[in-house]
Amino acid sequence: MSAISLKIGELASHAGCPVETIRYYEREGLLPLAARSQNNYRLYGQAHIERLQFIRHCRSLDMTLDEVRRLLQFRDLPEDNCAEVNSLLDHHIEHVADRISELKALQTQLKQLRKQCQKTQAAKDCGILQGLADMEDEAPANLGSHGGGVH
Image (cartoon, rainbow, N blue to C red; front, side, top):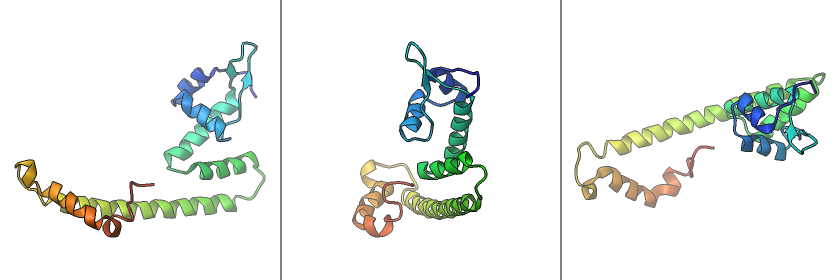
């Protein structure tokens, strides 16, 4: 580790993420535990900054923690063949394409729902509210692929 020595709050500020995120990544084994100072403060170095930035870049690409973990393993073994890295990214691209399709279907469904109420009126007469109530009966068939949100 280099000569830089940051406390967890300083690392969080430097990386632009909450302290809890750093602690979470440590618990998940993505970020190595920091050395402790004599007064028991966590001390982070340049390697922590770089690793945290790598993790955050992966997460900004909507990669799962397992995907990030696997990429970190390859990053830690720079002489290994990167074929599996390519495969991992190809799989993630497919996942993103699937999500885009799901979101487009969701957008279409929301637009259809929006068309059910074209004017301001009493809530009891709102076509959107009635459409949502009717969808409750159909939810498993029509909303199954969306089931509680986008993954």
